[in-house]
Length: 68
Image 1 (cartoon, rainbow, N blue to C red):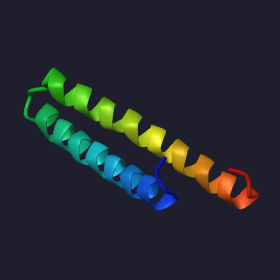
Image 2: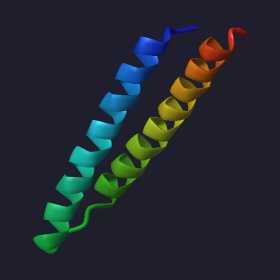
Image 3: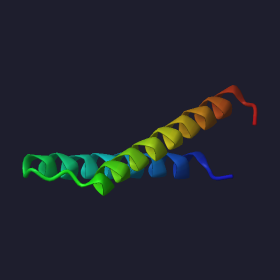
Image 4: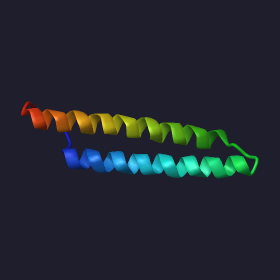
């Protein structure tokens, strides 16, 4: 559906978002507050990032093998 570059960019952005929200969660927990919504967002972005990384490497291996 989408090209390899699109998948790579999306995977990097999802990873960065997960790390940023994870850092936000860490800072919030140090302040004594752990909102459940922050935990859900971190997990959501981490799962999406893992999915896009998996899709990227599958596409890359498919292109390398020459099969579509």
